[in-house]
Amino acid sequence: MKDTLKKWNEISLVKRIIAGLIIGIILAVALPSQAKAVTILGSLFVGALRAIAPILVFFLVISAIAQHKSGQKTNMKSILTLYILGTVVAGIVAIIGSFLFPVKMVLGESVTGMSPPQGLVEVIKALLMNLVDNPIKALYSGNYIGILAWASLFGFALKDAHENTKVMLNNFSEALTKMVKWVIDFAPFGVMGLVFDSITTSGLGALQSYGQLVLLLVGCIGVVAFITNPLIVFIKTGKNPYPLVFMCLKKSGITAFFTRSSAANIPVNMTLCEELGLDKDTYSVSIPLGATVNMSGAAVVITVMALSAAHTLGIKVDILTAVVLCLVSAISAAGTSGVAGGSILLIPLAVSLFGIPNDVAMQIVGVGFIIGVIQDSCETAINSSTDVLFTATAEYAKRKSEGQELKPNLIG
Image (tube, rainbow, N blue to C red; front, top):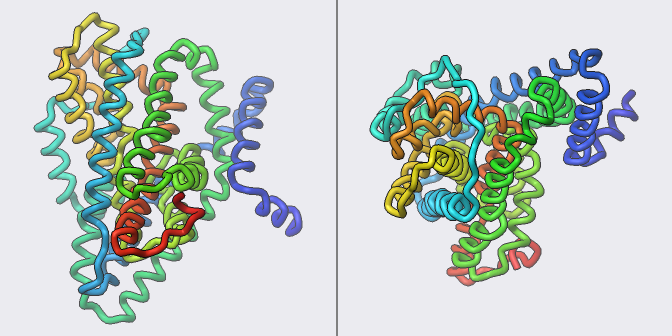
């Protein structure tokens, strides 16, 4: 048994996940009724990630800020600038893609039991209220904006604490990181259950009918991943960005694609930052922060879905309205983690710019949930991998300005 487990763990996680994916598809097609118990594996996997991710972010941020030494320079301003720039550029890519390849939806039943925000002011208000949410409630509900805010305050309050207290916080962070890694090790079985459930519930035909919309979303996210993000890295560093881009996508993006959780992918990103030789004092803050506010994938989804709705209903969108939509999607995307339903539930806010009523908007949300299997995975992959990409970019740009050597295998 030990030898079997050892051989299993020696196989790369990506290969194991792909194996789980294939087995899940085969079972869903060949034995849809006999293998229903497989869905439990998917539910357990997602439940475990959702349960531990908020606590992980909370302790990581507290520990990082509490142990930061005064006078020690970090690169947070540059990283935050890149996060904002990347999200806005992603929104612009989505607008261009939607104008070049207009896609129409097949609207079906409306989605009930949800309360989307009615305007940008309401989103900003909700964002601010989430900042001061009860910390226990924030942890329970997965309100990452509130978790980040309270963890930051706790961290600053503990900066003058005894060294033993800081060691204890660090030990908690490391233990939680290890626990998340254990959960991610079960990703192949979780993915098998999730894929089986998706196919047996919605069927392959449900996804095929929305193929054009999925292609547009994936295409825009691909442009962000392989063109605009590398361009931003090149402008910032003056070096070939693709070795770094491909490393981030391979070691962070693929895992995030299957776990569908930026927060749960934090330990993977932290390990990657360590491999890249980045400053721990910086990435220990920028990675949890990025998992909360760096949402270029969400900006793409909100923009594409809104413009597809406009095309479907025959609404002509001028350039000025498109620019406003880009800004709204960027601001909304930053608050995605503080709104139940994520980026999909923010679509009614975006389409309200075109005068689309809420009952129709909720049908568009329904379409979002149908394609969510692919949309959410691609969105999370670009969101999470970009956290590492921009953290590394800011640090390499700083090293370059200081005349330091960059590792040739990391950025060419």
